[in-house]
Image (cartoon, rainbow, N blue to C red; front, side, top):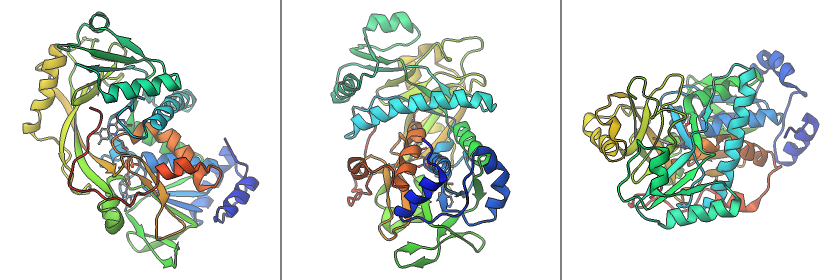
Length: 430
Ligand SMILES: Cc1cc2nc3c(=O)[nH]c(=O)nc-3n(C[C@H](O)[C@H](O)[C@H](O)COP(=O)(O)OP(=O)(O)OC[C@H]3O[C@@H](n4cnc5c(N)ncnc54)[C@H](O)[C@@H]3O)c2cc1C
């Protein structure tokens, strides 16, 4: 959906925004980009991860002049969205808000596919690989039953498989005492870092500005934030400011977010697939979820490796944490190979990735005003799953910020909750 400039200004004025420049199509935007870069933006987005970049693109497409500020850049190696790959599945029986997430994940799959179709003409890299997703368990559970209930209610295609069917389709997968196997054919894997780079490139081509700098709250006037302070002394003024800081939230807003976002570090391994062996590469192997581990096949053209994510460690400062995985943590993924993918036992590790999870108290996303400001938004709380939702979240958030999306139930779900983390840990799917 595109809102023409006149309607946009009307809508945003009603929503408390004030915007400057005249109407622009994509071509005009490119020509005007240099001029725009020197003018105050309507909206500053701090953070160029999944939340920030998709929101910025959608805001701009609705007519706003947007500047994105990121401490390291779009798709950088330290951001949570800067990983190599992210899974795109719809099995959310373990979440209280699972019905919505299942519906949105289905929508996200359609949007990733459409993005790749658009990207072919613009020579963007392919992002989405429709691998299908396979969940394997010894026995059913609340997670399995709730997931099936959501799928049934929403008409999401899936296949319950027998142990024989799994062995016939993927003979290189082993699972002792397999009691439950669910295959979701539409699911897939998206190239994460490249996705953020692609969205950033399209955003800039269409007139947006991205700056590499650390940003903070600047001058305020009562409940209004007048400026964003950029390291080096500059102040950028804007009508509206968005903070989409991922695992940096507790650093940026220690009092507000220190106990509302919990940071941990996830460990990801990419094992080398034997030369010429296509069994563990797309399209011959689905993404998978076995107890304590998720992963997926190696993707062409670079075949980074067969992905195994298991375990992790307590999170520390995202600016200073080491991102390699110490050797004492290599045992667990090797046990997964031994148990479920025996032909990969002994495979060398191509690469490891350690990145920060940022979980909210209720494990739902946060899309809310900063309680101290009426023109500042907080976006985040990815809770291990936000990447796939980027294209859907970005559209929802932009429309909500501009006052054209008003569903009170959604807003309540994404409210920054009053509760804070106690000492208990939180887990993903069982
Ligand atoms: C190991 C692992 C596996 C995962 N697997 C999946 C999966 O399979 N599927 C899925 O959908 N999701 C998955 N996720 C979750 C998903 O990656 C995250 O939910 C999502 O990427 C979070 O995006 P974000 O925009 O909130 O944060 P980020 O991507 O971290 O972006 C925040 C940005 O803000 C910038 N920033 C912060 N503070 C400042 C400041 N003061 N000034 C300027 N810039 C600042 C940072 O530099 C950073 O670039 C996984 C996460 C991990 C760690």
